[in-house]
Length: 429
Image (cartoon, rainbow, N blue to C red):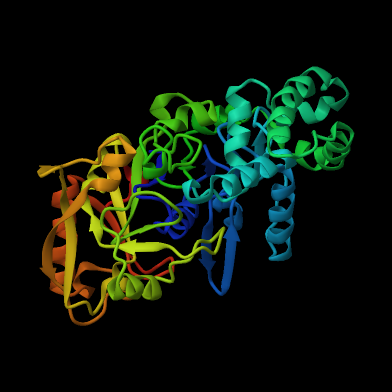
C-alpha cells in the first residue's frame, strides 16, 4: 500500500483539514512531521466541529496519531488540546497517540521573545502567530534546546540551562526584560512532565513497525510550501521546512517513505500576515472572496488576504515538493462570478518571468499577468462527480492542471467530507 504525504501548496489555509480527515479515516497511522501549534485545522465530522493545532488530524477518528521529531512541542498547548478533545468525546492514550522523545520543547520564554521581536519590528514585522515557534527552532539548531526526553531528567539540566540562559538572558536584557527565572521554569516543567512523558517514545521505531506491517501511513504537513524557510517568500516564512522532503528528517523514516505527495490547493489564493502576494485583490472582489470563503485563520482568527489563483506559484511549489497530484478545494466559492482570472506569469522590470524570484524586493515588485475566463452559472456546492459540475467549472479546473503541470486528484465542493470528486485515490498510488 502507498503512503501519502499531504502538504499545503500555497501559503497555508488551503483546506488541508477536510482532506486529511478524509484520508485519515482510511489510514492506519497519521504523522505530523514539522511545525508546531501554529497549524490550524478545522474538521467537521457529522455534527461535530473539531479545531486542532498540534495533534494530528487522525486522532478524532481513533487512528494512531504521532507527533514526529521535526515538530516543536508546546507541552502546555498539548495538554490543553488533548483535554479539549476529551471533552468532545475523543479518547487519547498510548494505543493511539505518541510523541517523539527527541522533540524540542517550546517554553514560556520562547513565546516572550516572539512577542517582543514582533512588537519591536513595527512595520517590519514578519507576522508570526506569537506562539514561540521560531525561537524554539533557533534553540534546536543552536544545540541548546530542552527536549521531551529531558523531562525525565529535570535534575540534570544545569548545563543546558546555562547555555539557554546565556543566550536568552542577553536578548531579554536588550528588550529591558528580566532574566529567565530558572527555578520557576523547572517548577513549571515538573508540573507538565508526567503528562507529556506518558506519550513519549522513539517514534521512529513504532513507524518502522507500522511500515513493516504494510500499513498505510499519512504524513501531515503544516502551513504551506510558500512559507518554507528555504523556498518560501523569505523572510515572511515559518521557521521550518514545509516541503515534502521534510518527511524523512522530521519522522526518522527514510526519504522513500513519503509515497504519493498530495498538494492541497485552493481554487483562488489567500495569505495571512505580511509578505508579498502578487495576485492580491484589495477591492470588492477580494472582499467578496473572503466573505464567501469565510477567510479567517483557524489559529489566529486573523482576516486572510485574498486574490485570484496564481498558477506561477502553484507550479513552483508542485515542482519543489514533487507533488503527484493536487486536491483542489473551495471551488464553490467561485460560483456566480461573471469572469475569473488566473495569474499565468509575472512582469518584472519590463520582462515576463515564469517563477517567483528569491529576493524580497523582486517578490514585492512583480506584477501579475492574467488570463481571463468566463465564470459559470449554477452551483458546484455538494458536487460529487464531474457530471454535477457546470461545464465552465470543469474548463477552469482543466486549465489549472495545464498551467501548474500537475493533475487534479480530487476536487472539494464543500466543507463536508463526502462532498468530494475523487479522480485518483492517493492510497492506491
